Structures are given as C-alpha cells and as structure tokens.
Image (cartoon, rainbow, N blue to C red; front, side, top):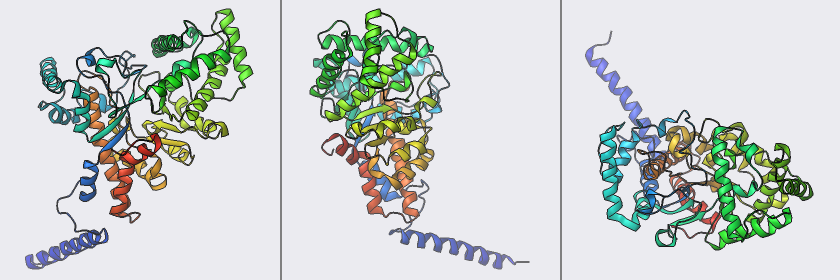
Length: 463
C-alpha cells in the first residue's frame, strides 16, 4: 500500500503530467494557456469576434418610435396570428437568455417567466429607452450588438417622416405575391395557415398592381410580365433594394419545374378569361415559370434572391417541401447562373444538404434564426463543416423579429447576435485545436462571415 507521502508524490506526478500536456498544447497554438478559460473558445479569438462590426444579412426591424407600435410591414406574412405550434425553447417565456437581454438592453432585472406585473415593468423599462433614443432607436439597437448594417426584410421601409434610414438599414422587399396572380381560393383551403396567408399575398399584389398603374392583372401573361413583374423589380431596385426575398416555403414546396412560357401563358389566359381558380397542377405550372422568370430578372438587375430555408413557424409548415435539394435544378439552370441565391436560416434540419449546395457558384447561406433557436455549441458542429469547405459562402444573420410581448425584435436580435458569435468562436477554435488553421486565419474567417462575405455579395462598403 502507498504511504501518504508516496500517494501525494504520485498525485503530484500525474498533475504535473497534465499541466505539461496543457502547456505544450498552448504552445502549439502559439500562445500560453489561459488558466480558468472554460468557455471552449480561444480567448484571443473571442475578444476579436465579440468586437467585430457585422453586417446582419437578415432581420425584420420595426420603425422608430412611435411608428413601431402600429408597424405591420416588418413581414409580408407575419407569423403572430398563426395557429399554435410547439414552440422551440428559445421562443418560450422561460428562456433564461431573456434575462440577460433585458438587463443589457433596458437595465431591467427579473427572472423568467414574467407575470403580468413583471411584463408591465419590462414595458416601462423599454419605453424609457425608446423615449430617450427617439428616431435613433433602431440604430441604437444595432450598436448594442456591434452591427453596422442590417438587411431589412420589410414590405416597405416606412413613411418618409419616420422610415428606417440608409446606410444602417438596407431594404429587401418581398416578391412571393407575384407568383400568385390568379384566384387563390383553392390554395387557401390547403391549411388554416395558408387561409390566413393568401389574403395577405392578394393584398400585396394589389399594391404592386396599383404602383404599376393597374387595378387588376393584365389579360395576358406577356403583359403581366412586362407591365407588372419587371417594373416592380425595377422600382424596388430604384427605391434602394439590395436584394429580394421569397418566403415561398410557407405557401408551396421548393419543387419548381421548368415549363415553357407558352404552357404558362395558356394557364394564365384561361384563368383570367373564366374568372375561376385554375387546378392546382395548372397553377403550379404558372408559378414555376414565374419563379424562374423573376429569378432571372433579379439576376439581370444585380439583386440577389433570398429564400426562407428552414423549418418555419406554424404547425402546418411543409418541412419536407423546404428541402434545399429541391432547388438544385434552379441553381444549375444556365439561365440563372448570374442570379445569386441566399438560403436563409441555414436550411435546418437539412444542414448537410445545404452545405453540399454551397459548391454551386451562385449559392450562399446565412445562419439567421438558427442563431436564435439552435444553441451555439450545437450549431457550431455544422457551421464548422461549412467553414472548413466554403467559408466565403457563409453569412452572419440574426432574424431579429417581434415574436411576442417578452421576445421582441430587440431581444431576439440581441440573443441571436450573441449566440452566432459564440457558435463562430466554437467552430473556429475547434479548427485551431486540430491544426487546420492558425489564429490569423481564424480571425480572417470570422471577419469574412460577420461582414466581408455580405459586403462582397451585395456590393456594400465594409462596416
């Protein structure tokens, strides 16, 4: 048996061995080991990531106060009126990260979940900051997360008096309604969610028709394309749009065929002349043609096409129909090779599929929404895989959105930004640990994901 002296000596030897291993590991990384660093992220890299100014590829900001209280143009299809679903943990009122967001943004301390009294106190704290910042409030929120510019998915950027101003907020308008110019009553019957969504699309199409000088769709497909579709894209670009957006996964699947214009024109003319809804198959023919036409026009105008690409909100969302592999024929269409496609939200749960699609020269992805609902360590596993293969194709994003009374666009922006930077740190530190890259290269990849990749894609100045 060991004596107490020998036992202490043996333990000392073992401890010394592990300290030696740790020190050698730190030297191989080109720095001393940082005692007490249990975060899993290289401390030097973490400091750099946390202070880099980012370009947010995708979010839904609200107008400055007081317009934010009545603003409904933050989304063409707001999800706050859908039937209940099983919410992810990050959207629930007991998410502990809410406490951190409330304190950092409003100086409000409370534990989750809030009762009615707590929610009233939270709203009072928010209102004090809104009043203090006034029209500068949206830009102030970006500053809290080191975000220089935000691509803003909105129907419009607001009225002239209190609009979201460039250069901090860049417009990305919606085009889904242009795919559905006919009677949508049959499509609206598919699910309760679509019953709510298609009237909203009809309303937005009517707006685009008015802006084109029309009160109804033209009688021929040719005239619809030349008098409505192309002019709408041209107006949006002239109005400051840097990209266009489809959330078509909420309305139909990604399985776009390649019909001829003649086939699409016959469907269009028959429906217009009869004033009846086309069959689902015929209508799909028209939608498929219109999507390719719009994508080609967007490419001609230099507008990247953003696509919602993650299991969406609502219990009726067609997850299988949003498999990004269904879009591969579009990406491979020689007529669309000049159109750059950005799959938003990283395609979850199809993270491997979307990673493989990054080999297409015209395909990119962002991590918005993932960075809110997927914990950073989990997200970092497939983020690392993407960065190991196609780092110039990955974009930072938050999907800041007014989800609920306790999780507004402010809190979701703050939490998603925090999580995204952590996930990036975990992924790059793992690559450093495995000697794939050094600190200098890790820093460059982080900078590219946070800002340079988006700046190159949208022809923006570096923040």
